[in-house]
Amino acid sequence: MSIGPVTRAANAYASNAPAVRQAPRPSFADALQEGDRTRDSFSQRLDAAVESVNASQVTADQLLAELGSAENVDIHGTMIAMEKAEISLRTMVSVRDKAIAAYEQVMNMAI
Image (cartoon, rainbow, N blue to C red; front, side, top):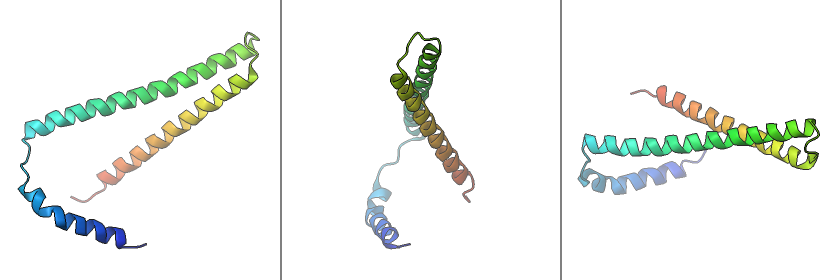
């Protein structure tokens, strides 16, 4: 493992440290309001992602039911919808696993 990136990061921090110390600090209320806006945005994006995955799963299930009842005999389209649903679900599970791992890392940090 190279220490070059760590050295560059330390040098960048050292060069910006005086500016950071002189910057005005926001009040606690301002920080809370900013956090609320960010949380709303994150929760909205997370909700939209879950809804998208759910919609792809529902579409795939509907197409599969139609194929089974001979209402829709488009095997190609049904298989594509099923694969899209599976890929989106795998991606969502992977993101969930990474978020949980990041949370566990933060919780295990020494204060």
